[in-house]
Amino acid sequence: MPYFKQTQFYGGAVFVTVVIPTFNRASSLERCIRALPSDVEVIVADDGSTDETALVSDRVSHPQLHFVRKGNGGPASARNLGIHHAHGDVVAFTDDDCVPAPRWPHQLAERLRSEPATVGGVGGAVLPLKDGWISRYSTFHRILEAPPSISYLVTANCAYRRAVLNMVGGFDETIRTPGGEDPELAFRVRKAGYTLVHEASAVVHHDYRESLLDFAKTFYRYGRGCARVVA
Image (tube, rainbow, N blue to C red; front, side):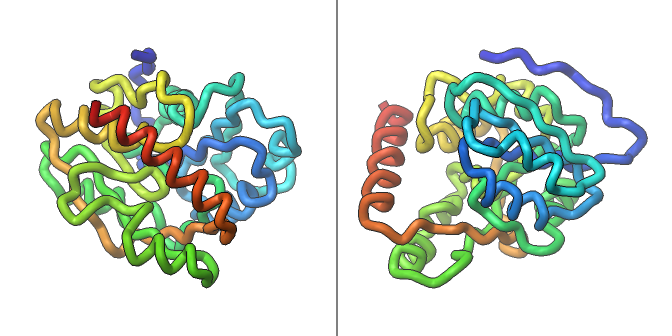
C-alpha cells in the first residue's frame, strides 16, 4: 500500500481538497477546473500526459490549484498521489471529463460534517453534460453513481474523510486501468467498519462520448475491473 503523509489541517483555510486524475485531456481538464469554486484546494494528478496538460495551469486562474506529475500508472496511482498532497480533511474526487455544478463539492463535505465519524464517504449524482443515447442509458442505469444500496462509491463524484483514506491505504495501484479501483476502495472502507451515504444535491455533469466503440471499451474496462474485485 502507498504511504500517505499525515498533514495538519491548516487554520481552516482549506476544508475540502478536490483530486482530479488526468491523462491527455487538456481541454476537458481546463473546463473541469474552471467549474470549481475558489475556496477549495484543487490537486491535478497528471498521470504522464503527453499533450498540453502541463500548460493548463498557466491558462486557468484558481487560487489553490496545484499540479503534481508522475509516470503513467493508471488512475488509482494518480489519485493516491493527489491524496498524498492533500491538505483538506475531506478529499473529493471527480474526473477530467466532468463539469461540477455550483457548490460542488461543498455539499459532499457538509454531508460528511453532519454525519457521525462512522460514515467514511459520500457519493453524489452524475448527470449528462449533453444529450445522447449513451448519456441517457448511462444516467438511467446510474453507471457512474453509487448503487441504491450504497455498497460502493464512484470517483466521478464522491468524497472521503482523509483520515479514512490514510487508514486503508488509498486506492489499489495494481488496478492500472479505469474500472474496479473505486468499488475496491469502497469495499475496504466498509470492511474497516465505515458506512457510505448518498447526497443527491451534489451534482457533477459527465461528458459521455457518444460512440459505440467508446461505449464498448468503457463497459469492457468496468466489467474486467469489477470481476477482479469480486474475485
